[in-house]
Image (tube, rainbow, N blue to C red; front, side, top):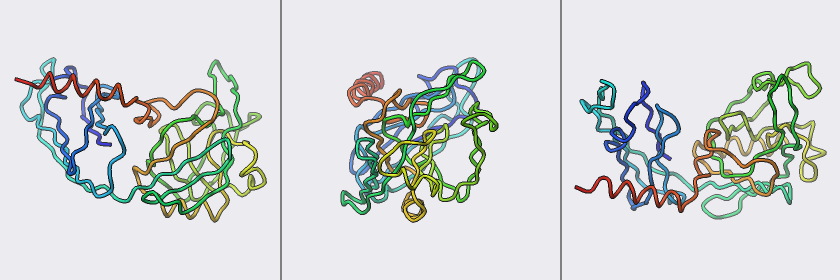
Length: 255
């Protein structure tokens, strides 16, 4: 997807959005939608085809954006979509199937979120791996995982602070595919994690090296609430809703 980030909150989103554009070759239909007052995303209705050339532009210089705010400068970027990497994590089988341009290249046993919730200090913490379509955000080797960052004290019953290797992040609130040899016994048969997808060392390293930002990870058949937009859930927006929004945008831009 394409992200337009503004360095200040935009009072008149509609005025800003009219100055944003995305063109693709081959053509791909899509739409803009706002995450908050400073970030607009554009998503195609379906996954980009490999090799698609995408040009995004913000032609906002001197444009009034509400409450005396004006666009400071124009900006544009062009990039090419790489290979189609789609991974499907299915809770029914406890396996992750990894596809490279439609070809199954690896199947990895996993252990996902144990399920249930715990309320601490008035905050309810979920231990499900939420179903939905994620994308790879970034990766680190190692990464420090600290339960206190989301409200679960380290010294509580389920708290932790650990150094984790080969961690590929897929959500804004800290869901990773990562190595954890301590749960190898559960991978492929039992969900025991706080929400991440655990892998053995060999599979975690392979996936870490294979993955690129924007790669798709679909989580299927898990319980709990579905993935939310703010969590990196851009693909949670239904295609029908996206088509309707695009139709409205096209009508509003007609002279």
